[in-house]
Amino acid sequence: MKFIKHILIASAAFFSTAFSVSACDFCGCAPGGNYTGIFPQFNKNIIGIRHRHQSFTHPRTVLNFNGESQVLSDRFESTELWGRFYPHPRIQVFVTVPYRVHERAESLRETTIEGIGDISAMANYALINTGDSLNRNFKHTLLLGGGVKLPTGKYQQRDATRAVLPAQFQVGTGGYAFTGNVNYTLRYKNLGVNTDFSYRHNTENEWSYRFGAQTAAVANLFYWIDAGKTAILPSAGMAFERYEKDTEFGFDNLKTGGDVLLANAGVDIYFPRFFVQINVQKPTEQDLPFAQPRGEWRLAVSAAYTF
Image (tube, rainbow, N blue to C red):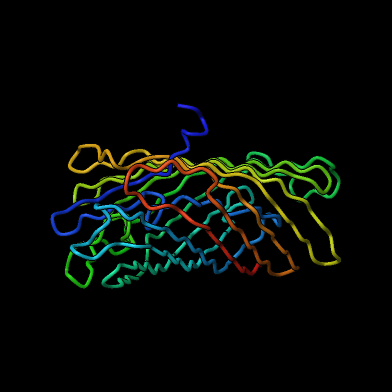
């Protein structure tokens, strides 16, 4: 298969006798998109709010039904309280607490579930850090880190017919996950590139379901614009996400796993004590297995205070 066609969005169908509707790995409680952006002002603590939006359209097939009701679309909203803290000059710790609202439109009903999602914590160690140096034309930052995601989100929620909703539609995964990441930024004068690579290993939950391992890679070009006490960073690039197959009772779920390629565009605006970030992503390649929902635009908006 050609590389470009290798870019599959992954599907994950979770079937039960009461609810035989497909759902996807990269939506709902198990998305990628953990890329947090470009953060100058090293050695400053940050606390902020971020809102993420994702939506998906279900194809009209015989599998996309909940009883007699056809599933049309899903929408996922996540509002996150997050922070970056420095227990040591070379160590930064990120903590994220999400509140999720998931909405499903069907031909006969609408379903909304909400609640605290899976809380995550990650620590990075700065192997190289000349990012804020005033005396260098070339500036480098290399961060290595890892973290853990806790099963704090609700799982096994049901719709109005009392049918258990698909695993990927839940606001939590029900299991622990462990992550590793590498983040590198190179800047020459006002022009720079930021790259981020992350890997997540998910553990089996108490219902013997395990989401597949997730890999994400992001590369963005950015340009630093000085405007007095304000800095503006427009950016654009690409992201690639891969999802391995889920397992249930130790067996592969053959309707899960896959890849997605996305185009990124955004702008960060930094003030002396706070900043805002806006980022949009659009899937550019989706090769979907039968009956799987298509991903639409993603949007992330963040505002944060530095201290």
